[in-house]
Length: 320
Image (tube, rainbow, N blue to C red; front, top):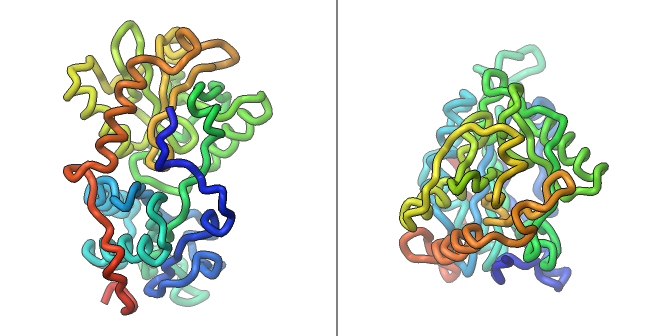
């Protein structure tokens, strides 16, 4: 099922719209850049968050900012500014872009070495970056309506003991290799397993499966996604039996329905796994029921914050 607010515009100028924020300055998106010496660039020492907006409303803004703060805490990155400044940056990035539908990204990096002789990350000053942009296209409308094709990658997910997946980060080495494997094998995307063979997550998305009538989502080596949380809340509200629990790849292969969740894409069905149909090979009834409710919540007053397009601020925002 494709939500109309999520469609990429056909006008090339619209697709290029967006705005950037570089450590205190707003700049056009194509001018936004990061210093080569920033450890966020050359050592992937960075955490981030992606916050979607639709029809001029930001979805679960405070929940995303709370997770962003928790990611910084786990990564031992000092917050570069107060939380209220982050709220203002998000709103201004959207307003300056002129977009009604899209996503805002916030990133905190370790920053630049104070001098060539200092390599202790505890002595760095973290930096804040951000940008607004059109939502990335996850597939053609026909593909999204009919369902996605996935593989189970041979690349295992990085274990939490090495990189904590609950801190949203740019350590995407395993994810990118899994995505390349999917391309090599003629699939649209990939699902990764833990080192001991349980389902973890996909390339930038969480996963749900209906197994023996129960809706399940993995518990380990995966991001605690805001969309994932929303689906679990929807399941509870709709009296759908759901659990956060480990399950092996074999259980996934025999599931009745599979769908993925992400801030950028929302909810999409997986109808082909390892070249075989999932369930009846169509968008499942439970998946559609949850997706319908999700899109209602994306723009509801309870779950979203309106963007004030009439109040564009002109001052430079810093953490001072």
